[in-house]
Image (tube, rainbow, N blue to C red; front, side, top):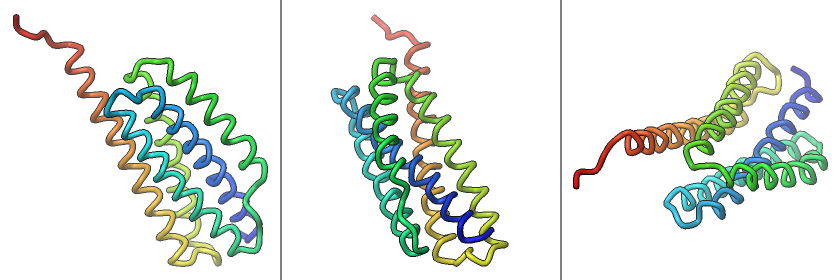
Length: 159
């Protein structure tokens, strides 16, 4: 992988993470009266950390984070968050799981490619692994919460 390709891939993650920040912010407002709203707010903060650390890496490589990502991703994230926020929490959790799994798949691919690359510094790989772990933890929370909702949905309360 050459430097230009790496910057392009990092910009993809920069845009994806920006999108997730705004998605989770919108969802935190939509579910503000529930515990999930607090979780979505915290997830937006974690994703903002990913935006910041990926943006810093892009700058270290002598480039600037994509302007398109700065402009379009928040709009897409907010719009998607607003639409998704009108859905049930169970539906939102399923969609969020798919988004996070896509991020995990892409992080894993880049990490594996960087291990064989001139630009695969230990520091960059560690940063991407940490982001991957965060996405994995988000996914597991979504799955756990969905299971909890489904268990309640298919049970009866005694009189």
